[in-house]
Image (cartoon, rainbow, N blue to C red):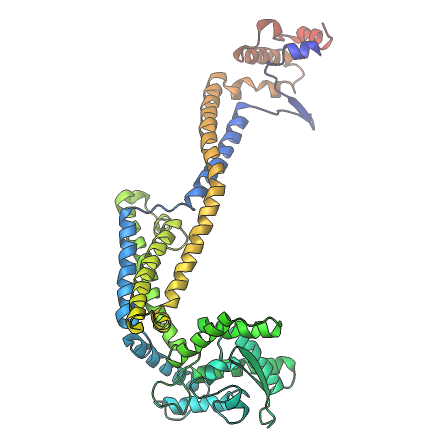
Amino acid sequence: MNNINKYKSDIILDLNIDDDRFGFATSIDEALAQAEAELVVLNETVESIKELKPQCDKLDYILAASSGALCGVINIFLVGKPGESPLGDITDKWFANRTIDFTKLCGYKGDKNSLSSAINFLEEKFKIPYDQSVGGGIFRELINLTPSNHHFKSFGHNPTLLGLFFSILNQFTNTSDFVSNGELISLNNSDGKFELQGKNIPSKLFCGIANWIGHLISDVSGSSGNKGRGMGIPSPIWAWSNDVIAIKAKLNIPVTEFDKSVNELALKLFKKGYDVRFQTTQAIPVFINEMVVRLLYSIRRLIGYYISVPKKDRSWVLLWKSCEPFSNATVKRMLTVAHGTFCIIDIGDATMRGFEKGIGSFNVFEFVLRLNVVGVGRFAISLYGETKRAISYGHVKESSDFAAKKITIVENYVEGLKILSTKYDDARLLTFIADFKKSDAYIEAFEKSAQLAEFRNVPANRILKDKADIDRYFGGK
């Protein structure tokens, strides 16, 4: 044991025997292979942090802010508010044409240019039990139902998941559910005229979903008896104020005054024409902003690629990797700047209009009517992404810094192994492994092993030069 500790710094190569084969557990070539494999892993760790850190330069920020400002101006002058929106008129016409197209798919053979006839056809084809638009008694006293508000107050007309749930429920039970004054009101339809088609539960469920979708399309451009623009269906964003009240009612949670005030504000907005059509109009400048920023990013990187990469080294794979505007932190940072600029301009304009209409005070209704909720929502998504990447960057940075330092150490280690490989010429010296398998070649094998020991700086008195030395060594002498 003492002899082992005394010479523990000697280089020892383990010789393994398996199925009459000899092999070394370590060698310079194997060490090189392991080190190079480790370098690949370390480089991947360092590269991972680049995916989280944006590489925007000054021009990227200028282009992104310019796109946001341009789209903000488009929003102010071409979107505005319901009833005063040039883009809104185009959107209304587009929805009307799509409604007529849908009636054709459903077998409509009437006047193909008459929207009211097309809507009447869909109302008859996709009947539902909760389509009361006005009435006396409980409808007037308890719900205050009118043609201008029944699409909002009737839950089945809300284009949300909860709206779908109540629509199916009403069709199965021949009932109607409404939200009014912060309350969920359910009524039985005693006339029994409505009957959901289908022979079993799955088929009835399918018919119920089809009725809900078809009836929403019939109402998206107003009802058949409307004059002018008509009342469409509520925007999904503001229809959630109904969902909150319904969920609280089912869970026996008291509805707060804030819930009621938001619901009342949403109803007022709807009556002013703030429906799905206008919500779509608001999405137009936001979509343009998104596309322009991604396009500017790609064009800049495309030009840079052709300038910096020689023609012989170009490929479509590298080109796409350099220019793709979807999954990298740089374009996402540009989008955050663009949508942030858009929101600043939009909120500034809405605030000024609010004070203008308030005549000395702030008119919240006018502010919300002009606020581009789609733009605010898109900016919120960008901020969430930035926050998430910042947190991930903090977690990864420590590992990346350590990996970068380790790369330097491993690279120096690899260079040293290459020098050793050249000096010792392992491929030639270690051929004595094969010689051990030849019964008459052990002398040559001992000579090679002794030469290898000399190259590896083993003290002369520790080198085993022949069989007698080996016998004495293992004999404890």
